[in-house]
Length: 339
Image 1 (cartoon, rainbow, N blue to C red):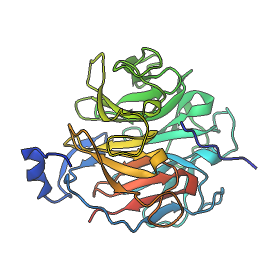
Image 2 (cartoon, one colour):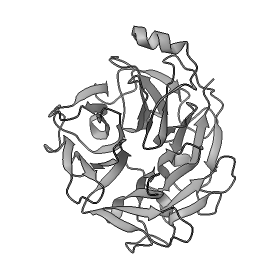
Image 3 (tube, helix red, strand yellow):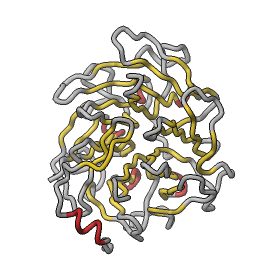
Image 4 (cartoon, helix red, strand yellow):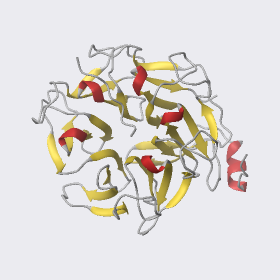
């Protein structure tokens, strides 16, 4: 039996934010490669009664199970695509389904084109109707068509210790390299890419990263990086040679100024950051320019109850502003609905 080893790896509002807080969260700002980014009020509240939308409390490879889910992507129709790390596969869960569908891998772990080995992240490229996957242990980025009958993928990029993926509205692909401590941007079809964050060795300087994991890219091509071993989230503006600390960076801990091994993240149209604070078993919200964050879910310690988390990794939103988190150690994906 395979063992699951997890990789341990009050703020002032601007006038614009105050104006937005009175608007409906169903007003949308823009689309990012066909993914709608919602305007979420800065004071939005989320129902604390969780809804399990994929997997169960038990690990396994049955159609209704996951085994240590990592990154996830929520499409415009609330279809969830999940990197099912422990099962070496990508699983798709449509809204309301009790079972998922294997859409990539699932042929045991390995390096053949029909196999994956510890996938960590996935996104949907609507233009080509395909999945782009971080096939971490195989050190490659692969693409699988979503068309019926697809049996194997193709290698887009090799020789990369990829962990997180993002795509901007010009269809540039961004990849975090966990070992080289950098983020590169690629045109699809390009093999080498351009360093857009880090790339100056392992460290805690503003021009460095230490074990970068998940990414978000905004409409200005600014890159947000979960700088996991530095316990911070960094923002690298387009063309910058240094990043800006936008959350954490005060050592590891559970104070509101701190993060402890951050992973999945999302940034809304106002620059409000939501991040999975993994080792603290919580999701935090940091307003743009804030010196500390707010815990929006997960203040009840670690566990399996509906108001508790295990080790969180993936985080995403749907077009209504609902939060989805991959609870890796509890083997399921949960949704918190916006009130």
